[in-house]
Length: 208
Image (cartoon, rainbow, N blue to C red):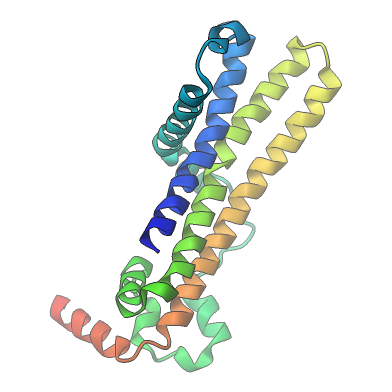
């Protein structure tokens, strides 16, 4: 199971990184730095390994861009996780765990049942993957706008620019939604953990 989670986390970086790599490949081709002849002599296996490694590294290094874009793009409405959970589960209004840090609750859930915690981990990783795919699509939209004035097919470029921009903003929104779902899933599962409120209260008492 740990191997499966590791592979999923790997793709959470590699898929956005592959989009960055495709964008840089486009720039290289436009600037005549990257040509078919320059990569034609590279063995296929080596080329695949290089692409995968570069995709992972680019996705890892560009992670802050996804985080920044999530903070910059306006929200249609502010959804507070604890309030959403209490609206759906009124019986939890006096439970101590509801307002605790989500990462701390996930750790408690993993200690209680690792198999169950996998669902939350997948949702969180999916949200990060979707969100981190937004910046390279935004860069591609900017490149399409440039193509409107410099390319041979301005109408096609204009259509692509609009589609890429909308896709980028949609990915940010969907990433937030998946993050909210992961938080809701965490609270819903922690609701059924025995003695979690006593442990949280004891920890708060030690801190205070």
